[in-house]
Image (cartoon, rainbow, N blue to C red; front, side):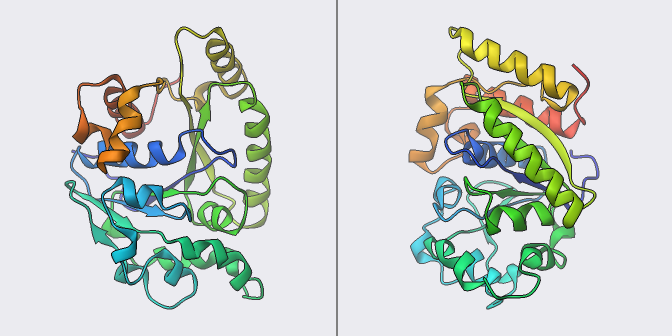
Length: 261
């Protein structure tokens, strides 16, 4: 059973695409939910991959997170059950692509998601926000709303460059909007044990961020790629796979307030 983490909001962010944000959002949330607490995932990415990856037909939803950003409904009106125990989702929509333009003149537009979550956050042990691969308004809203951020980092050449840019953004957000925002942890993804570059990147990230790096490393794994096509988190697709076991391990590490390396 979970410790008391009621209402903790964690954004999963990296402005670089293809690093495993959505994979982490889906599979970490499902793995934490499997330990016994209600978990909410907010899909704040116009690509809607978290929505579809949890088995939700985005076209069948009359309202979604887009309507919340435009103050057309309360967030409680869009939250729906998934087919997976204790796991709920606020689905996304392609309409999110237009949010930045539609809200350009709105006052306090950086606070829209934070304000929306006030009324419901205590209904969940954790709320995970899947951010788009950019540092625009949607990601800014997620960071303003969050208690902390998990940063997936792909073990490849340009990883450190993108990580530096994101940490600068986090400092700006802390200074301007959310002084208590913290890095929950950095999770190394798509790690290939046969690749010396993966080992080098992992070593550099640990050297720079120390104990902020999760001990659990997410490997390159076919099952992690297959599970979304079946609209399932990997623990419900193939629990014994290396990909599934890595996210179960990451969930345990998060819940135990990971130790220093």
